[in-house]
Amino acid sequence: MAGQKCYHCKQWIEDGEEHNCWTTTEAALTQELSDDLWDAWERLRETAVSFGDQRIYASHKAIMFSRKSCYFFVRPKRNFLELCVFLGRTLKAPQVRRSDRASKSKVYHIIHIKHRDEVEAPITNWLREAYELSEVLASKASMARVKSKHKLKSNRIPPR
Image 1: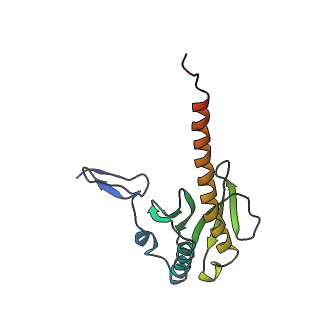
Image 2: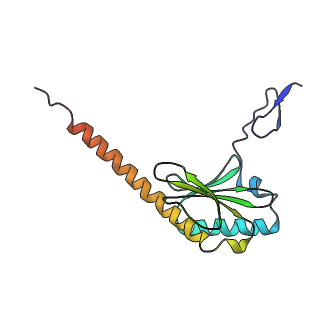
Image 3: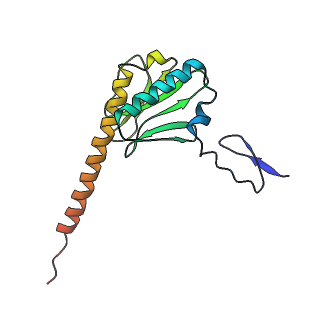
């Protein structure tokens, strides 16, 4: 039977077979982690859950932690967990491998985690800061939409 190789996941797909490599699960992404990485993953997840209400879901090759928008995600790799944290400022710390502006209000930071003991301050503090920032930014965006609607209504020309 004819088919093709998926550009993203490199899986062979037979003609007529349904395929969506963007849909995955936490279990699928973490199933091949070493014991040390599994322990680190559990601690990261437990830490995030302790912050409060949020949505945790797998997407393509990452596990996303989101309130109104994603505040951090984890990409499980063979030898480390790649943590990407969104903050309102740029961190200068040895744990941060790379950082860059993600938007006007957010900077992403890439951190590699290899062991459970690394999931402690300051990393846990940055995760909490990102969690709290996501709510602040969502509130500001909501207020901006309300102001914009109000401004549009007040700029209307009254009927004669």
